[in-house]
Image 1 (cartoon, helix red, strand yellow):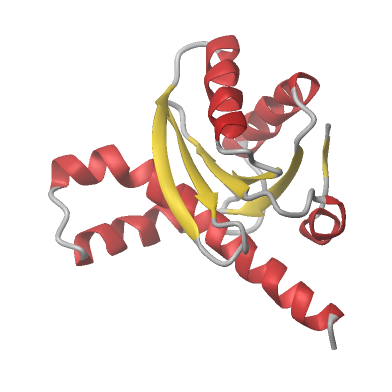
Image 2 (cartoon, helix red, strand yellow):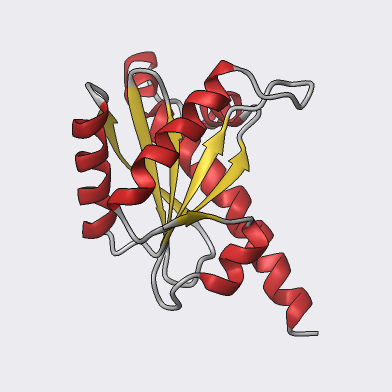
Length: 160
């Protein structure tokens, strides 16, 4: 459908449906889904990447199964705030995905999301092997949680 700002997502998203978060890696796509109240993010499965058409089909099938009303996409911004090749690749993926769905997309700065997700998994005493399997979905949950917290702050501001 289209890429919107996080503020526009709050206004335009379908009410009563969860939001999804994705962490687009070169080998996998981590996915997380919110609860219906948009309060917390839950890691879901990891999609192993192959070629775009198969990646898109698998992702859209999962988002449909979860009844997602919008997608928060982690944007890998450089530490200095600039966008490099990975950010351009992420934008291109979303641009190519949009004609295949009616979902709204919003980008979210994902700086340090993988680092934070790895720390959380280490604190939970998850083995190195299991961390490797879960890191992308945990990063997606971290990205989605940041956006959910921002949406919650927007809703609180509107209801004042």
